[in-house]
Image (cartoon, one colour):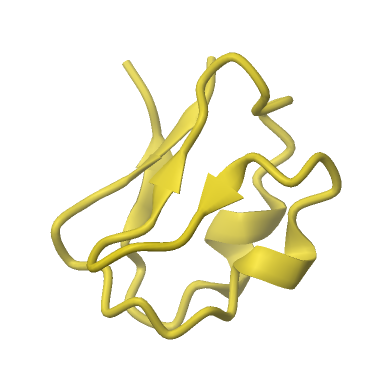
Amino acid sequence: MAYVITDSCVACGTCLPECPVSAISEGEIYHIDPDTCIDCGTCASVCPSEAIIPGE
């Protein structure tokens, strides 16, 4: 199951270089493409605002 980015995202960019499959896109609130995400959790482990959580 893909990770998702919640409204707590502050668009700091910390997660972008950590994603091994480039599933994260920039914006006011970043977005993870569920079709590309491999559910590794690397992005969630580096998020300073804890805005990245496992999807449902």
